[in-house]
Length: 441
Ligand code: ADP
Image (spheres, helix red, strand yellow):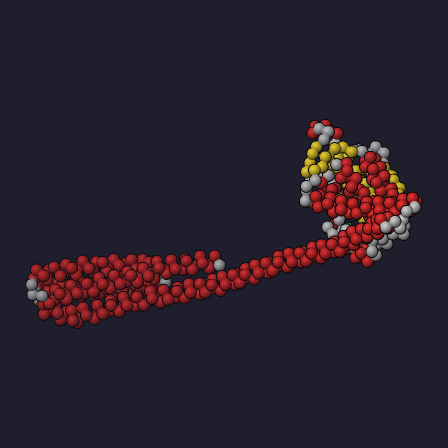
């Protein structure tokens, strides 16, 4: 399009320089030729000898301009028809001037009659030739201008068509982009809304069950239905168990909200991996024992300490162990391993802590989704395994805040292995920045 516009502009300039200016110059030539002729006729029709001399001079002055103009036309002529016409004009003009000079000479000698005869026999026809030549030149310029105008017109039309095409394409492209963006926004909003609804449904269920048990137990005690010491102790432990469950649920939701919004302040320090594993095993022992799970522990010797916030890292690993119990299926064994590794992208040392179960496993298509807030596999909801869909997102947020990550390998019906990768603490670095570093996730 830019090329078209450039061509059109060049054509217009060419047209102006050639045809328009040429037409103007031919107009001037016609005027001067008429002036030459007019002065000669004035000289023929007056008896005043002074005026005759004056008109003769005027005629000669004007003819010089015409002669120069014809020479310039010839010098600028490019095409054969222009050159041929220029030469003819030059010849006809010279012929007329010859007759005109004879006429003027007769007038100045006083032979006016002879001059009139000469003009009628030779001057009139030869000037007519000049006039026709000039008309021909004009016509030639007109033709050239019309041709160039057609070229400019064609290229302008082409430009307009292309411009319209480009505009239509851009309009279509913009509309398609807006539509795609709106659609993807709408789809993700719908997905989020569905997940939130699932979350509300599952959380209300999770809340209602322990609340019902607590209320019923408290009611029995208040009504005096239970009065024996042994039974009271049993009811007390039921109430304590369900209250803890409720507290854990509320804590998890609050913790997820604060972690996800980056409101938690972590104290990063070097931690021994064995300390983390022991704390997590202690916190989950009761749960594992109740579910009849055996937990194996393999911590490699000589592991470097990791950098992290102790309670956050424990929380992260604990979520993985709780899931291994919940989704451990009919093979109640869990293995926790801690071993050294190297971070591929960073070329730095890391320590990996994996939690492996032999339970229901996860479909490959769901491996990314399980880390999205509120996501729960349809299999586990159908099996009525309780949960909120917040444990893994929370664990991942924590791992990333510690500069680490969580990876997962799983196969349906075989089991899953979740691995928490944490950067190894560098002694030099830790010394230089002090024993403690406060970071905001
Ligand atoms: P929740 O356990 O409360 O549903 P999570 O965020 O911890 O929420 O887990 C999300 C989903 O990932 C679970 O609902 C389950 O479908 C799947 N999942 C997590 N851990 C395991 C595991 N060890 N084995 C099989 N599925 C798992």
